[in-house]
Image 1: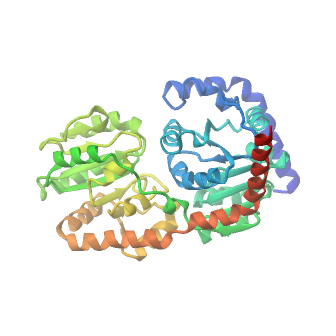
Image 2: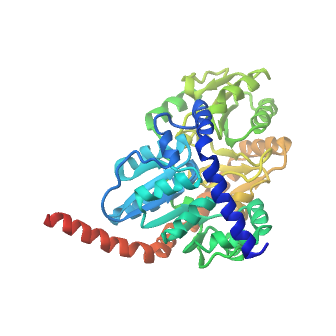
Image 3: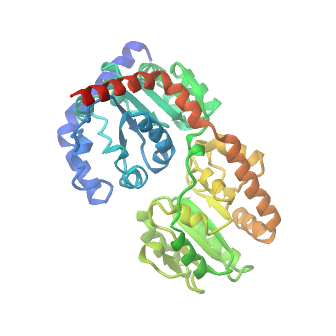
Length: 440
């Protein structure tokens, strides 16, 4: 595709968005009815700010969901510590809650505007960011083009390019180049990601490692942990976290297979989307398995087979209840989920083979003996059983995971170095602004 056609395609995208903008309200209302939009703040999705812009320099940081928000939180804190205002946008209700819990009033949270020209234009007109920092793989054409038109520097941090996304962009190389040329810098997670961004026209590109390694260990309410541990007692436990549709049934079947040998077994199941917990519980109970739900405050009794962790922000609680963790979106779904939190919280890691989105992390963990991949439910059941019966081998995997995480640290420092040319002028501007305010 030629540059001319790429420009035409992007122009068509721009104006098509403007045309459908007046009727997009039905879509947002539908999402709100499903609990996917926060009632009372739907205007933010149209770029209507709910808070006044503070005076002085301001950085717009965008993180799509919970995982990206966790990854970027230390970076945001570092920017705020420099005296620079941050408006942090996310796209989900759960990530908004995470921002409130971890950052409070240190930042301004807004829901990200829809990638339509009127919404993006209204958002940028109000906030007038001096720098835009985008996390991971959030490539929104209209947003990138509008920022470019306003000459706002855009930096992609913790950049990731999945196999599927790379193949799709490669088929539209001219469009990719027309978009990525607007990025002032790409800080990629791995050498593979970095090379893919270069191939698609991004310049310059540096590699930092994964920001998720430099995040704090997931927190826990100690009194709640002690209460649950007392309920569990000396029972054997393993956890299946971040599971997707189809994987919960596999986990339940694995539980049944394991219980033949481990009569006191308790399986901890944490669906990736807590809203599915009721459906998951009904499916498992239909298999004759007794379930307890965390959201209902169901007690864990000796007869409880599977404890479903369906509360937001409690991954630190669930992972501390087991030393073996299967990480989902890897057997029946594609891409995998982040294995670094289980490694930080001293779990031997198991996963399916479809972990393309976290390839670098898994390669390191597997090389060091901290993680093992399984192909199906039989292999998963065998791996869990082996680790139950071989506590020394389980401890070797746990220790290897902790060492791998420690060896991977340093991404935050490397990312801040890449951002320094963009942030230092804003630091000086903030100091001048504060002095002028003091003189008045």
